[in-house]
Amino acid sequence: MLFEVKGFSKRFGPIRALSDVSFHVRAGEVLGLIGPNGAGKSTLFECLAGVLPSDSGNMRANGQPVGARERSSLLFYVPDAIAPWPAQSVRWALDFTIGFLRGRAPLREEIIDQLDLRPLLYQSIGTLSKGQRKRVLLAIGLLTRQPALLIDEPFEGLDLRQARDIAAALRAHAARGRTLFLSIHQIGAAARFCDRFVLLSSGRVCGEGTVQELAALAAAHNGARPCEDLEEVFLALT
Image (cartoon, rainbow, N blue to C red; front, side):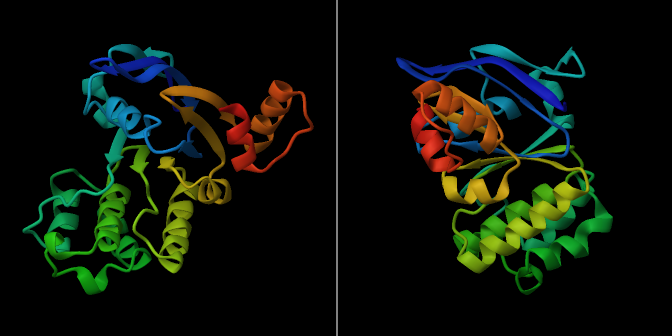
């Protein structure tokens, strides 16, 4: 196990965004955080990454507590729909990641080709389309050294071919031992790509495990035969 989360809660005034969220992340797995818009997925990632303080709860790795300031050595967060350094070129952003963030220089050219960034290297990030910015953000994340990547909506803004290429690139890095924790609202895409899942609804964890484990949980909950369609399982558990 790479790390575990116990009892994360977060409120925004009267709104309870997260309520006693607990789960664990295994080293080298592709873990999907799935749930509808407004379920609390982005808030959970921001609390895990230390962007937002949680109201309660803790994270532990190897049995030891991991404080918000210590998480930067364990996690790197790739948010959705941002344009970092908009006046700078894609090439500058990748080189900055390698230089300032001590990224993995030997992977630079491979990642550029995997994510089809070579035609974009001299374009300013602020001029890129949503899908192009997504590929740049993913490249920055993949270049970092942290063992776990938190990626918010990795396939948002991509067409079908791009999404398949990105999925193949992410899976290749996971096969080398990189842990990927992906927030995905498209349950069908998550089912095709992830090893295990954390189901989040209204800020609460409704289930955690493989499709088969979640199907058994849903069947026990409803007194029905197991159905291994992840969308049906999610609906049954939420």
